[in-house]
Image (cartoon, rainbow, N blue to C red):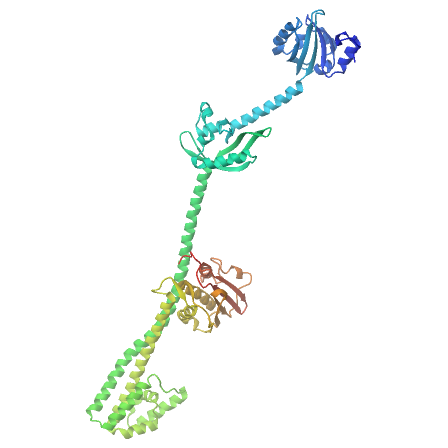
Length: 603
């Protein structure tokens, strides 16, 4: 404390100097002549000038040239005793650097000097300069950014926008004060933006915002970016948004989507073509089998028709001969009886083993030769079919006059041949009819696509279609459940499934083995079907791949790899499931089908 009753200016000189030396501020006394008289504090450390230099040169020589005029004016004003407060200027250091000083001074006319205290503000100015430089760089970055940057006031007006904003939206800086957010946003996004800003005002931020901007000329473009709020003392003051024009990306996405759609369509078309090709290949194999199956009975019927004409003519000729020879009533009655028996036995001939039949035919031929009817040897087979032997022929000879016996035997044998040919033609026609019926059942011709189907009918018709392949050495075992319900499905597609599975099983067995088909009622009203073969099986490392498109275990050129994929798609498309279990000597494909197709599935 200073001595009582003394002001600081009346303190002893050594006390005042010691106090100022201990101060963080700089103190000095400068004469009105412009020279420093006394300095205390860190002058030398701050400016790098020695005390001798500071006291030997005019004060203004240490002031930055740009601040000399202002400093001179303030010093001149202080001559009359006017105080200088919070005046700042720059001093030059011995090394050429600049230090900012804040002055508090007063002129003392009686001493012809200024008494002053200065504080070093250089750290604060440097910090402010760094802040200003950072802000400048930030603004330069914002201005040079390609993103659209804007600051929106609570009332919706635009506080700040960057150069990219003007470029994209086409408005001039002069037009900015009259614009609000809703002038540049598509009307369809107004409600969305209102809700968004409300959430931002509550403190939320959004990293992904998509809206559509409307430029001054009316064209629209999509933008994507983020939005956050700016608060001061906890009060919301603005919304900051950073958007980028995503028109090019949207166009690229549209082109990509269009390309993907066209590619998917092309793949679908080609896949459908391949599937159709596989179906046609299957149809071709079935057609070949059907041609073989139909050709046999058709050829037999045609051959029988040709032979029937000859037999019928010979029979008529023999009967006319007997009629002209005035045969007796007993002869006519016996002949009619035998002709009736011939017609009956046409479909129920006497069956003998080859050795017994040969002996019987030789016995009949000997009898004919003994009765001078050697030219009738061709009748031996027909007479045996009628159950005739030597004893029967003896009885026949007792009934007919010797001149009528030959004609009677000819009539009987030829009639028997004719009736046999008629039966053969009938059997062939019936076989053809059954095959055609199976084909119609298999293809569901003249029926609606979706039917209530009996899976047994479909399996049986498929076996008929593949009969030529299965009769080569494959034994088919049907293990059909009695309580198997009818199901609603695409009958023709389901038969395609059975065809592929049975055909594959036959190929796997190499044309020889056992094929077992089981059916059972499944839970929920569905149907379970198993198709099992005793072939070599599917290798364990590939069994999981058998339903993949183009996968096949057959040699090149013998399979497309689409058959089981078609099976899988057809079954799953009907709401069912299909799987396979295989080991050497036993492969089982298991199919489960629901009672009804899923709603909405195409028929």
